[in-house]
Amino acid sequence: MSKNIVLIGFMGVGKGRTARTLAEKTGRFAVDCDDLIESFTNKKVKKVFAKFGESRFRELEREVALWLEKSVKNTVVSTGGGFLQVPNLSKIGTVIYLHADFDKILQSITKHPNAKKKIKKRPLLQDLDKARALLATRLPLYRAVADHEISVAGKSIEDVADEIYQLLS
Ligand code: S3P
Image (cartoon, rainbow, N blue to C red; front, side, top):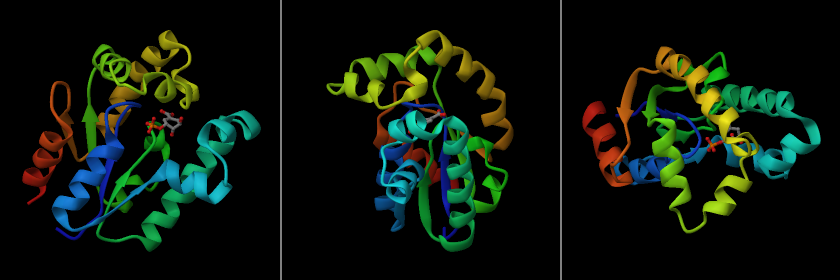
C-alpha cells in the first residue's frame, strides 16, 4: 500500500481518529484537511466561517485538495464533512466513505466527555434539523465519490481502521 488513503464522511464519524490509527498501522503519516486550513489561515475553522463565510472555507478546501494531489504521498488524509465537493478528490488517493446514520452520529457525539466543545466548534452542527437534512443531501454524493464504504456505527476506531487495512491490503 503506497497510495494515499482519503477518509470522507459526515461530521462526527471519527475520520481524524481513524486516520491516525490507520496511519500508525500502515506506516503512513496522517494529515487533516481542517488542520491544514487552520494552519494556513492561522484561524480556527469556526472563525474562518464567521469572518469570511462558508464559500471562502470551501475555496480553501479546494486549495488544500490541489496541494494534497501535488505534494502528498503515502499519507492517510482525514477531511472535513464537506470536502466531497473538491473536484480532484479521486486524484488524491483511494477514497473511503465512513458511514453512520444521523441518530448514531449524534449519539456518539453527545456521549463524548467533550460533547459541548465538539458541537460548538462545528458551525454546521448548530441547528440539528439542518444538519440532519445536510446529511440526507450529502449521502448519495458521498457514495458517488467513494471507492469503498465502511459502516462505523457500533464499531471502535481500532475496528474501523482494521477493516480499512484489510480492505486495502
Ligand atoms: C464541515 C465539517 C467540519 C469542518 C467544517 C465544515 C462540513 O469537519 O470541515 O466545520 O461541511 O460538514 P468535520 O467533518 O471534521 O467535523
